Image (cartoon, rainbow, N blue to C red; front, side):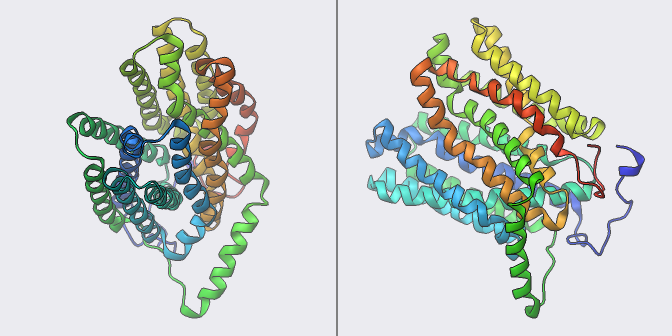
Length: 416
């Protein structure tokens, strides 16, 4: 970091949240990210059990899972306003309460009652809470990042990845020993809620408006959100985040299946290949922050996107298992930074951060909704493994969007 970009030695006590220490807030945000990943992975680890309990076809399961995606997308447009109105701590707690309640309802509806509508309602609440929590915890994360004066948001996403690995591992163990899905999901829901309650206690304090000024503040928040949808830089960041979300989500959804179908691996080996991708993502998000602070967002993202494109292409075209697995590792490393760095760039100007992060989140998360069926349809035509070539085909033109990550003129931030 250059001398001109260095943060002030003392925090500005006139700024929102400066009255609380930043290091406890950093730890609290990391814990909340990890617990969110734990909750989401807990559900996905028990999807086979839910499918069996509800006696669903592949199409029926897809519609059930769609209820969660719809909930997330409906939450995203207003999540920034909720975070501004309630403060990030309360917004995260509200979102987590919905996540935990929805997880318990979905597990009980599937495992005890075999009641499909109940499971769908639970997953809708789960998705709505996850969308709200995602935006609010990223807003808090970007605030902590600015207070620290160095890149930290990708490490919060690494914590999310570690939480998801833990959730997948616990879920696999629970399934192996025959723990009922209702009991498993209900216990983990309680753990996530209590842990989040403790984590948000360290969040940076939000400013408060007077009672007389709240109506004007609410109108200003709505205007800010509408204005964000008309900002070219915000929309272009959202488009880049969309491509990076697709790059990550396609591996999450299809990588294990593609290696089973395309390379003849066992299901266990396919799951292990996906584990290689997750490890690559976690390493990239942990170590990549140092590279960004040294060289800036734009050159680092150019390099990592090229790495992801090369890795995904190698994973599909290698024709040899070990070489393809190397490609998966490169794919994970290269895909690791785009999503969190895009959100960080959207939050460069603190007063507009909630609206802009919300808009970028809405655009980016459409990849998680539309990506799986798109690759599934393409896979029916060319095979699941070959369908993943769509990833590098999208990444290469996305390089043209990377310069929009530079901080706007007049903002004091890390190198571009």
